[in-house]
Image 1: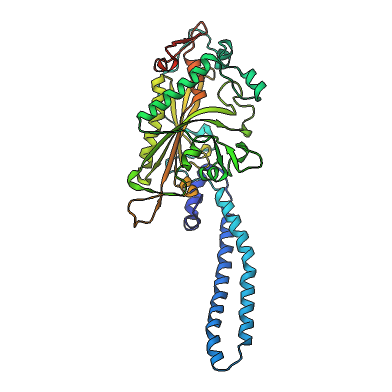
Image 2: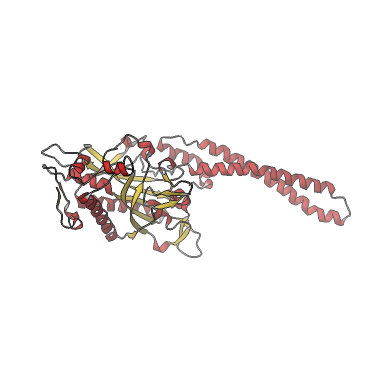
Length: 422
């Protein structure tokens, strides 16, 4: 959420920066509301000054035996006039608060302008896509043929775009989760097992609400939501806290299921594991000092890339353009894994710096000394990785001519020594 003072004092610069997102956010409405609010407050202050001046005169007039009735009438009229301004001020304050909640974060200077993902800029590639001597199958066909993915039974239990994992498919999902958590633990992340439900304040704190309301699973007649990512509980661990600056950066990681309606994504990637309403994800999260946060973003992205490198899955990293940037994000690197069935790279991780955007909404501050004025921290997070998509990438990239799936070497210990799904 924007600080109204910052927006007011840097209006032209912020408007120009937001233009990278390729949308009109109606900032002129802010200008008119803010101008009217200041006019009302100025008018109220002037009347209060007259009230105070009149109030100071009354004791002297009474002492001198003079009539104060007209002055008292004037004070009453001023009080009524001041009170009459209050409803308009409250209405403007409420509209301004709602307006500021819906203004997205300012893109970092290194974010390229653009309208959508076609304008994203490739930063680097790792690995070479596999060259098959046979026609590779998509993971959904492999999964059903090997009896490890069962969307039909999942649909009977819950509905479309859910998945039931069977046998070694379930074992593979669990192996990937444990492998990722172990690696992030070695990289200094404290493992967290958070609640999978969050209340509205927590969702607002991370920027999921009000922006993504239609994509959230809201528990009816409550203020609770199923989490769309572990980012929500991890960020809110330190909501409304002032942290010791000497203890920054803070690193957390967590495995959670994630729940998303993705109401706007109907018809896209609806088969297999790429876009389901419930999926597993390992998230890494940081709270950092502002001066170090972009170095921390590079390290966080490298930690996510390290998982793919150990799994020997080809991928590329892209810098998201303004039009493809998330609502709360100041800068995002997407990591895209090679998927033979798509014959292209598919997103498997987003690594983002939110700067102070989430910290302002959630009240996460720090100071180095007790006497210092607290400053807002920077928050960062990344999928490391989306587990279902990782399983899909393994299935497709490690498939064999006979339809079996080889297990990546680093996962064999987590699979109890199983080297192939057959």
